[in-house]
Length: 478
Image (tube, rainbow, N blue to C red):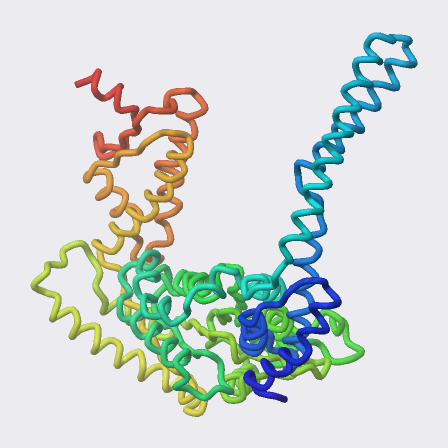
C-alpha cells in the first residue's frame, strides 16, 4: 500500500483525466485532503483506491449540484405550467377576455424564463466549478457518519480543551476527566501503539455518579454525536455459548446473517466509543476477545471479516468496590471546606482498597492492557446542587422557546438537591424529581394559560413544598 505522500502524487497524475470527465477543476488541497482523510477515516479499504473514489465522488457531487437549475428558474417554470392550466380552463369555459389576458401573461413568462436560462448558461460558462477540500470532507462525512465540523476543526486545538468541554456535562469527577483526557491526548499525539484502540479504560464507582454519562459526553466530543456510543450489557454474556453473539453465530446457526452484536456495530461505525457495562459479569471467554481487541486492535467475526477497532475507545464499567466507595466516600450534607485534605486522603485510601479488589477479580494480563482504571468519587451535596443547576438550564432553554423566563430561588435549589440525591442510587432520581415537581406543574400551567409568552415563572419554597407561580401573581400577593 502506498503512503499518503505517494497517494497525493498518484492523484496529481490522474487529476487531468477526472477534470476532463467531470468538466471541472480539482484543487491541489482537495487531492491532499483526499489522501489524508481517506488514510485516517476510511479504515476498511486501501490507498490509493479509497482516495481516488473520494475525489471521483466529490467531483460528481459538485457537477451534479452545478447542473441543477437555480431556484428562481424552477419557480418560473412551475408558474408557467400553472398558467397554462388556467388558460386551458378559460378557453374550455369560453371566457375569451380572461383567456386573452392569460395568453399575454404566458408570453411575458416565457420571455422571462428564456432570459433566466440565458443568464444561467452564461454564469456556467464564465465560472468553472472547482472541487475543494470541503467537498472531499463532505463525502468522508457521508461515508463514515463523522460530522463535518469535527473533520474541519483542528483536532489538536480541541483536544487541548477537552476537560473544559467534558466539565460542562459532568459534575464532581475532575480526576476521572483529567485521567481520560491525558490518555486520549497521548494516543492522538502518536505516543501509543498504533495497532491498539485509542484508549481502554475501566470505570469503577457506585451507580448514579456519571460513568455512563461520561462515556456519552466522550462520544459526542470525540466523534460529534452521542450516536457514536455502542453500549453492550455484559450481563447478557454470562454463559459460554452466549459469548459467540459478540462476533456472530457460526455458519448454519440462527442469526448467522445478522453478524455479531459487537463486531457488526463497530464495522458499521468504526469511529465510536464502546461501553461494556458490568464487565465483571461476563464469561471468561469474553475477556479473551477483549484481550485480542486491546492487543491487536482487531477482531475477526463469524464470517471471517477482520473488524478494525483502532479508532474506537473502549470503556468498561464495573460495580466492584461500589459498596466500599459508598461506605467510605463523601456522604451526607455537612462537608466543610477545611476537610478537603482529609477527604482526599480518605478517597486515596478507599481507591487503593478498590484497586486491590479489582486485582483479585481480573487476570493480570487483562489489567496490564488497560490504559487507566478510573475510580469515580461519590457525589457531595455541592455536586448535586450543580447537577440541579444543569437540569434547570435545560428547562430554562425549553421555556425560552415559548418566550417565558424562569427564576429559581436558593431555597428551591436546596430542596431539589436534597430530594434528588439518594444514597443508594446517586443522582439518578434527580431527573425524575425535576420531572414530577417542576416539569409536570409547568406543563399544566402552560395548558391552562397561567404562564403566557413574555411572562416570568418563579419557583420558590412554601411549607417545605415547591411553589410555581407567575412573577406577577407573587407581586400581587406581596
